Length: 120
Image 1: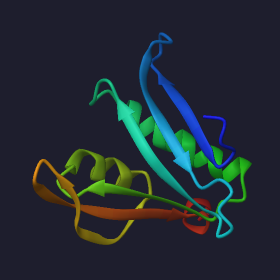
Image 2 (image 1 turned 60 degrees about the vertical axis):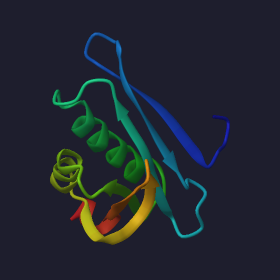
Image 3 (image 1 turned 180 degrees about the vertical axis):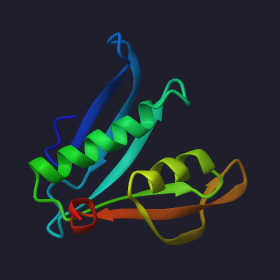
Image 4 (image 1 turned 60 degrees about the horizontal axis):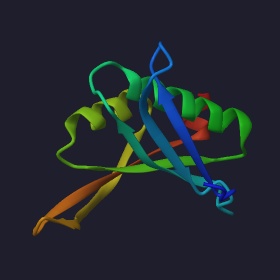
């Protein structure tokens, strides 16, 4: 957690209770491209993920010189795809059969948002 290239954040609900966490990597990337590596929520469907995405994107563009924020999401995770799209992320492509889990391959969709898109 002391790595200056990474950011580890806790997501809390309105009462200050743990609702999840978020990890960003690549803060020192020479291409100014950071990866939203992980968003994990204890409870889905309450808007915590969407609000966390909104806040981290806003913070990264306001407080760093990042040009691009990217992430990958499993192609069957329709809820997450909807949240990322509604948050301004664009689909760049699919990494077919990129992850082997429990003997079955899963594909990842790569998405990103650029500073110019965010500011536009």
